[in-house]
Image 1 (cartoon, helix red, strand yellow):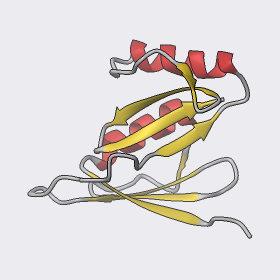
Image 2 (cartoon, one colour):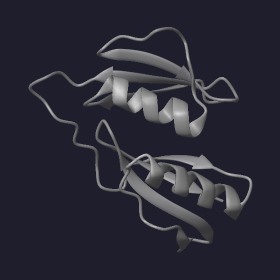
Image 3 (spheres, one colour):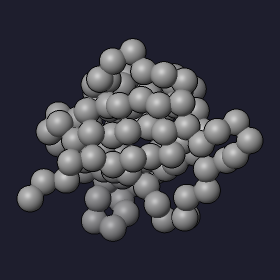
Image 4 (cartoon, one colour):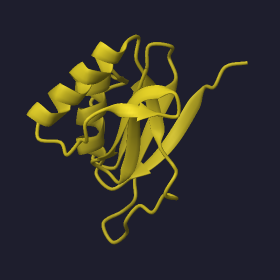
Length: 116
């Protein structure tokens, strides 16, 4: 069995798409819209970004996140470096729960973990 899709409600669909496309290699289905977009990963998982609406904010539980596993610690470090260069507020990677990892708040109101 294979997970087919995940829907994320986000505060800023274009900003979330830009981050996921540039730094995590997600592929867009098409040009996207202000409040709706569809992205695919390397295994064709469908990640749908749905705008929360202009008078609302996203409120995920504290432990909710999506994770991008990397092949090596160096790959985690490289993504961390590129995110910092692009102005994202990311902490340095560290050893946590047996992984070389870091977590950060993505534009749109959800958390991303990058790990090896």
